[in-house]
Image (tube, rainbow over all chains, first blue to last red; front, side):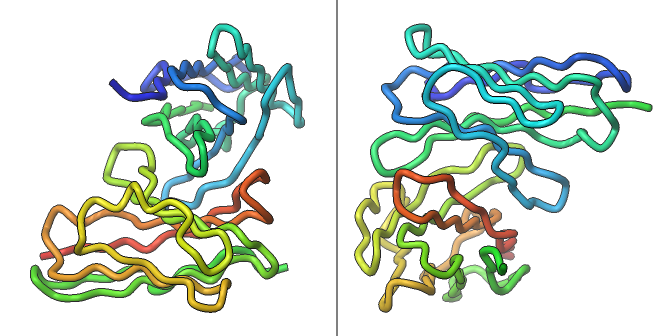
Length: 107
Length: 113
């Protein structure tokens, strides 16, 4: 069983829709990361959080440590948000990654 | 400033050959990580350096894989006797220290024929 589970695996939305991607993990963590990976492979870190909620522009990330669950929300989605979104948890000295959620936002 | 860079961007080799993949971290970052990403999957941890030493190499799949960081900056991932199953994108990331956000390089796509 993977330590980090994401859902959904694939998500298609219309421009403007509110998007939610979920992440559940089974190990104790010191921090959780949300990453964005565009076609071609480049990975960009969106958030690193260990409690509560963070917001950056149209992106919001929340984490519930007790429930071992995090969500990434995108408000007013746009085609340029199309990418793979990866949840990763810091576990000791390394990170364990989810398989990613492929988001496609159609105009 | 410059981000994490990796060379080469693409490497095609034949089964059984030796390859070296290079990572240049952000200047001043003491922590450096290697990951491997197979098609359609999330990255998988390989090894973590703190300074010059490998603090955690538990993710290296077998003894054909080895990594060094002799001066605490540039790191080289070395793969001996490559196998077709080694084909993947090899990602490097660095952070100021192990507690900080990681910055990823663009990756090296390795194809073993």
